[in-house]
Length: 138
Image (cartoon, rainbow, N blue to C red; front, side):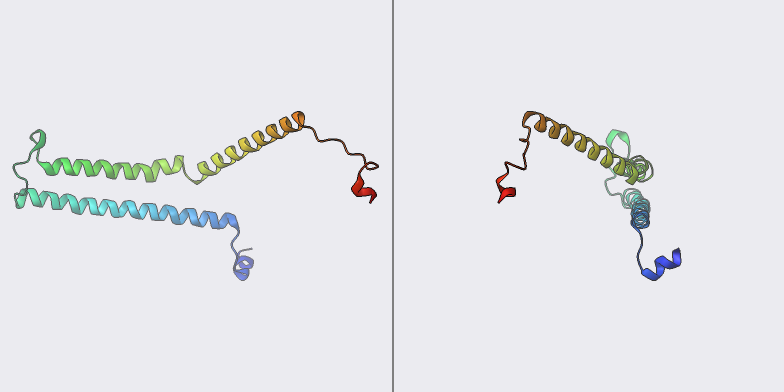
């Protein structure tokens, strides 16, 4: 089966969708890892700026050095990023999107059918008699 697919050079839509989903997840995890590395480097830079170079030494909101607040805020954003990648994506990933799409399509089909029935009931088409139809007699 796999050799037949390789020979034809075609991938069925389900395999393509799985492949694209895997690529998307890899890209998400790669971005999160990059964010984490930049967070570590930035945190070290903040500490060096404040402690070694005395940058903003006198600025202490709530009695704590500014770099602590900056690192905590950045960590909070990193945490939100991680939650989005590992939890929200699983809850609202591709399967969830497909289920929502199917549900909405079914709802629209039902509404269209109801409207069609209402139109047919309120404005019925006249019954045609083949003997009286001028186009058929011509």
